[in-house]
Image 1 (cartoon, rainbow over the protein chains, first blue to last red):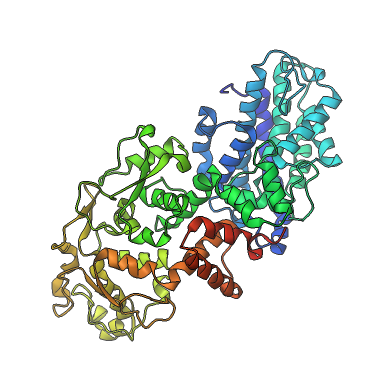
Image 2 (cartoon, rainbow over the protein chains, first blue to last red):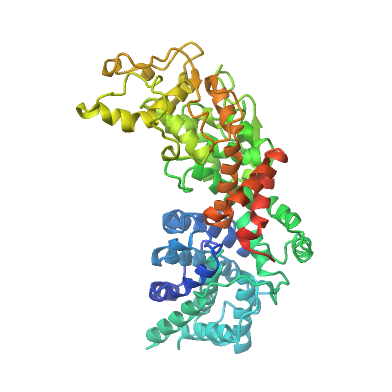
Length: 197
Length: 391
């Protein structure tokens, strides 16, 4: 879907990117790689194909293709850990959010409550207040399962549901629901765990 | 206030997400597949194997039963192996800078096709064929003058596993002596344009034998074949030539005749084969620099490195033409070792260490014994404990 990001999403993405830079810069966790020399990152082609396989969005989708062309030179080229830096992380995160937005856009076009997929149970025609705590938790589980192929930890579930809540305000519009789901999806799809290879 | 809270949340989340997972043999609670299994598939296919995929159960069972080669074979049958992994692998060899981020070209397409079809990899340097898009793709055929055919395949993100078909001869309608990748347009553009074609020698050794010039230059080698355009007294000091220049030019110029009939017209952007009796003028340019130097009159070449044990040569030390030169390289022991080394770097994401040379030799010997099949080589490399550990 080529649906534009709701306004709130732009704010969210900016914050997400800023936060990513701050967390990526110290890079302390990459010390793990020293114990495992085979560890690597997905490179530009692998990031694209992995996001496509997981989301089912074809790499030829115009929104994906256009964004990928913009950021491809910033994505990891060889998949070496040394290529992990704020620039490559941002490019990866941005591309992940485009795939997420595409999937959400498809679900938004479905009238009523989404029946299947990671957004099952979400009514995108309503504000976030209509997404129950249980549904938010389910969203977190669904996205971790979809992208990382594992069950989330309790902390991750808490953080992701908090993230969903942080995107909402008193207006309680349908756009906010989309933005909140986009935040959860992007946080998982753009995580370093998914970027790692 | 909300923005601050959100930033803090995201900081916390991303910091946690930044913890890279360490592969463990424990199966994922969600999928039942071990991290090793996930990683093996991801490294070979370039994307994950999802639980909803019909191949998932069989793949997981193979991993659980320790049939890693069987599992790897599922991964190398995946479209992603061709569209991502092999594409990267080939692209790195298809340009001087060694970057995978380049347009698709005939060099890469041929490497991908040869791997898919399980052809003898030695024919990469001797074969009279190339790989092109099938007619269903609706793309104009490739020409000697542009890369449009392959760029269109790449731009349209066509599936390389299903789109590429073998075309014989390599260049229909021409009489060009074929030598696989060495007579691809991509190669010609990189190494036959301008210059003296010496780059073709240096880079063919670097790319296909993993032997940069620094590893084989030798001032003790006879300078009999060094051409006339090489100054024997650079800077007025003959010692410079004797102690430096001849070390590279001695072996390089002796091989150079192999490329005597080839040129690349920069203005027309066209690969040119000049015919079996015409030597490209650039071979004998600047004759006055050293008139007593070697004059190239045909496509004969001499292997002045025949005594160098690092290559493991198995062919005669002399030959004529580009095809016999390709045959010399591809039949050397070092060709197999180089393919192993390159596959290892692609899949294992690191260079082979000095302490792993025995592994390289073992895999290279197996590669040769089993018929030089690249797909199988990738499977062997990926499932070696040195690459991704053990399940």
